[in-house]
Length: 242
Image 1 (spheres, rainbow, N blue to C red):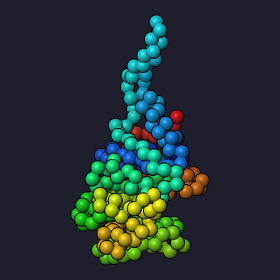
Image 2: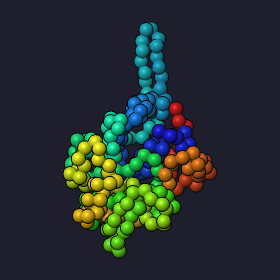
Image 3: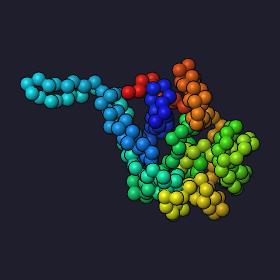
Image 4: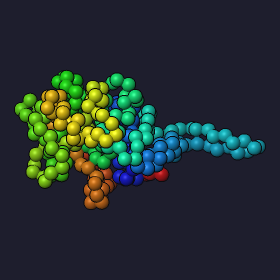
C-alpha cells in the first residue's frame, strides 16, 4: 500500500494489467490485510460525485458520476505467517481451474501482458515468468537458447544474470506443486518445475523496477512526476490518494 504519486503501488500494478483488458484481481492479503480491504471499500465513494441528502429525516446517497475502474477485486486473508507458495495455494478456490497471472506487489513494469500470455499459451508448459537483466539481488535464472529455465537460485550477489521479475502466467496444475502454508514458492515449487522442464521465461528488455526502499520509491515518484514513468501506459492522470 506504499504510494507512488498518491496511489498505492498495488493500484499501479493493477492498472498495468487492466490496460491490457485483465480486470479481475485476487489479492493475497497477509499482515494488515484489513487496510487493503478498507481502501477498496472506500475507493468507489472517494472517486465518485455524490449527493448526501439528510433533509426531512432522510439518509440518502445519490451517485452522479464515478471515475473508478471497472474492476472485480477479491481480497483474501491468506494468513499472517503464510509463505508465498502457501498464499497462492489458499486462493485456489477463487481461481476456479483457470490459467492465471501472478505477480508480486512491490514492483512496476512495462511488459506487454498480452504478449506474455500469448508466449505462455504457445509453449504449453505449466509456468512462465518474466525475466529481466538488471543489477538487483533477486532470483537468478539460467536460461537456455529455447527460453527454458535450466536452473533457478534465489537471492545472491548481483552478477548480471537474468532475474525473476514476477509477472508470471500459471496453469492451474501449479497448485499440485504447493503443499501448504509453509511452501516457499521460489524454492521447492520453482525448482521442481525446472527439473521437470515446466518453467519457461519471457525475456523482457524494457522497464522493471521494484520498490524495496525509500531511494527506489523516490526514483519512481520522480519518474511519475516528470511524465517519464514507463509503466504508466494508461492515459488518465494518477489521482491523488485518499
